[in-house]
Image 1 (cartoon, rainbow, N blue to C red):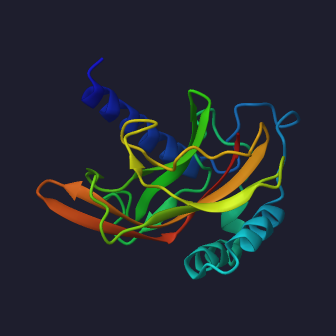
Image 2: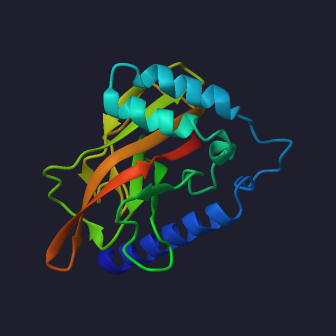
Image 3: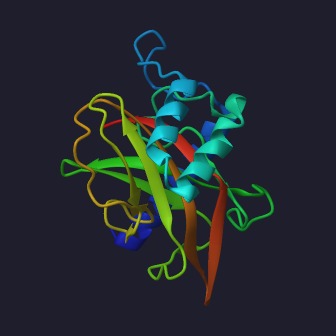
Length: 207
């Protein structure tokens, strides 16, 4: 299949999944409720707050999430596509009149046994030149205690239309909570548009 066409289909599917996640907040697991691992939202935020300590941008992102506990309550395991349950909002949104400032969502991928955090969304396509912008993820593994902050700077590597981190090691096969924050450049026709996230995307996934 042509890579460009495949990328468009992936992007369309991911965007639809984000919309579905927003509409059905709290019903985001394909597993029965009694078999899906449960993560306490307050505990998840507390872990990320500890990891973010000392990084002003990360601290600000986590504090925004902590200030609205009812908006971060859907932290059961993500959809099979490992899309983060809580989507991101930005100053530009996706560039259309319908979804407002709904911007996109974080995603976890595990291609060729390489676990990565990623992000998709925004107007146009993610630009290859990210000069002046920086997108980061703060994460914590409940299985191993591994944690950190990583840059999402690899475009179209793990999955077309998704910007990703390098492979993240040390997570084993357990629950991971993560939040993506920062800014990203998008190519919209001949113009480059920078989107700055004001509401981070938050998710609990399986490594």
